[in-house]
Length: 157
Image 1 (cartoon, helix red, strand yellow):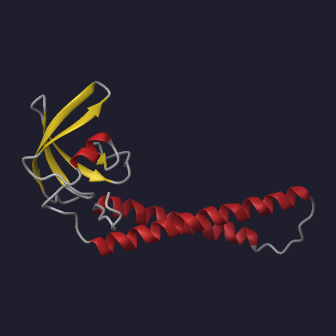
Image 2 (cartoon, helix red, strand yellow):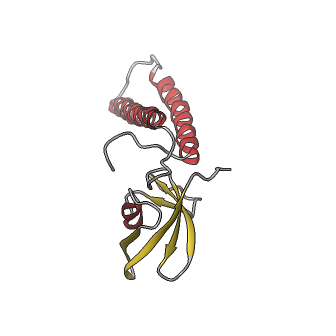
């Protein structure tokens, strides 16, 4: 990828926004346990307090990462339609003649069987390509190729 902000799909945006809401809720709960003004008693209590502080730090870092990613995606605008990029929907004809509509994403989404991550062999091969371009990539079964049929936004449900 270019290092510039990359757009994300509507589904990926929704997933990140939900994760952000969940993390903020979890952070509120953990922070509430830190406000307990009870004196630290034994080493076990002290260790627990340190563990919660570490958990808050981890949550804060992830909240910041997601917040930055969402802001950058907004700045990047919609997914490209002239060349394959993160967030693109692309129709691809594989060497066996089958045609599939795939979505290029930056993170795998468990329920999205049509998502190809940008860092997978096929995803890397497709990035920057245009309709009519042939891409070559490796699979567990060996090298293969595919042709980009079309690029375009597909409405998410």
